[in-house]
Image (cartoon, rainbow, N blue to C red; front, side, top):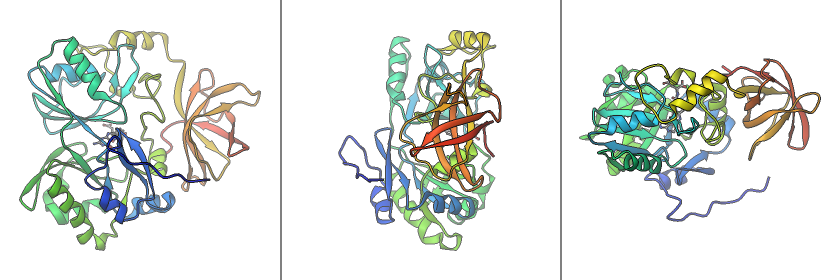
Length: 369
Ligand code: THG
């Protein structure tokens, strides 16, 4: 396949770590929240094997924060998400679908409760800040909304615990999954959460002091040799096998949370008040007509640059393939697809044209592993 370079500009924002990852051999970028997000350092299969075995440091500054502060901040945050945050605690992260009036998804961020009146919405790739500002103005909320200077470094993989202990001490291993606290590096406090966009374990450092963050980035490589630390990035294979969904790829503003399997994050029957609640009640009553499922194909290679029609044996279109990769674990191509009712049977046989060849596959449940 012919390769193209990406034209940089002010509009396509760099990160504080861009010059470092370029020295380290980044080979592909994607664009996420109008910012560079590394997509490969050479072979993604090699990176996948390394991520499952050792530890990687990722420039995920493109996971931008929308900061909501002020007297009405809790009201505004709850208005945006269908997840019940009434019992949320300071020092915890919450995976929260953001929903519009129609009940469709706007984003699927991690929300951090920093104080009773201060929240960070750690967004996927859509402009949540304008949605938040529009709501705040329409509802006349007393809030301040900004995109603060926060540039996340993720440390992911089974050896991330030992690497992070070497920098921050034993205490970092006491962090619970989706908890966060503040840890010292060379006299600077950094907010660190036990989270990250892989299922191999790890941490995310929400860097606010850019210079200290850059020193931390370098330090992780200096002291990480014994753990075979390497630069990395969110890995397509690992995230599909693990069932981590991607806004804009697997689902978007034409899909609702029930269609995406987010049922456990939707609360309809209590006191909470969010934007799309009435429409989601109707969806729940009437039932959904499409849903995300997995597909396994008898193929060894795939690269998607859009969605791909899926057909049954009689050539009826049964849905669309939205993400796919070759899975070393299953030794075949696997993918995430939006499947129309009534084609939701596990092991239903499907066809798709992949790289010019008709491939056959079978529907399965998510997650794959
Ligand atoms: N970390 C931070 N910000 C982010 C992401 C991240 N913003 C963009 C994107 N990733 C948002 N999407 C997700 C999707 C899944 C998860 C986190 C962010 C995730 N899910 C866990 C799971 O599915 O097992 C836990 C969910 C839960 O609470 O049960 O981690 O990665 N800062």
